[in-house]
Image 1 (spheres, rainbow, N blue to C red):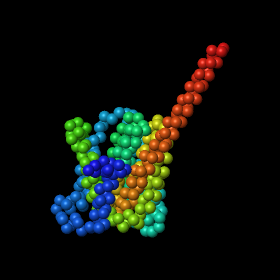
Image 2 (cartoon, helix red, strand yellow):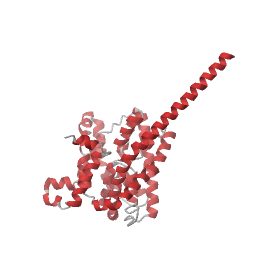
Image 3 (tube, one colour):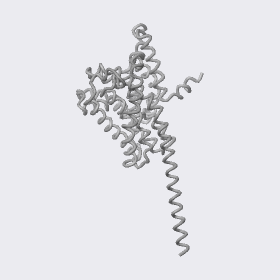
Image 4 (cartoon, rainbow, N blue to C red):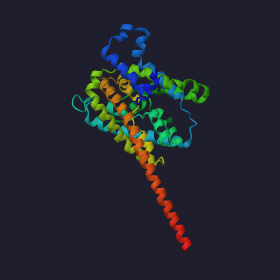
Length: 338
């Protein structure tokens, strides 16, 4: 059976397929974890410890000796996306209740959902798109996007937007596994090679555990809203990212559009943040569902939109080169005539 190949054909499938299976388990067999207990319950309910190991492995995979071009590209995209997410979160906090909208098309929308959906880029999706439509340096720009992984950036944004206050030790606790992995991976290349395999391997495990926090009845209620949130993420973050890629990064905007997705790992952030800041608990379940739907939406739309845009820019560049060549030929003809 070609199970892995089938999963790979689904956008973000390595994360989304286990998440859906976990959600099915939560919806129809909510007692499964407590019934089986032991290691089975650990797989079902162990979101935080699994993610802690994943953050550590993610840290080991980042090489400090990345080229200046890669750092400029990725740093530019990370900073701009974080600033846009902060602005959107701040505005959402002024108009949306802390516990989220309770009815209508925007049901479940909250500052927590907006922040979690917008502040992280799907680095794997970005790298895959840019390998096809960009340069090697642009593809490698996902190196700093890994820093967005985890709740730290979301916590910083929520704090800066005045939505929540976190104790300093909670910030340290959120980033410490990542930092330890980062230090070890850069001290010893063999450790980096050993642990970085865990980045991919652990995704289905925390995806399934995350799914066990989602009741599909809530997904049914917020599904259309999740699609809408995904479109909002592409528009609100994509336009500034494209401009930044052109003005600061020296690109043609393709890398910016490719970075306008919502990351699968962001699905974990609402629940993790709610554990540290209980005022978010009423909004966490709906936010998780919305972010999951937004992640799937952007995973489908971003590659399509980026492909169309990249082909347009390539065609446009070809026209410009042809015009320039014709102008040069005309100039040479005039010189010869004189």
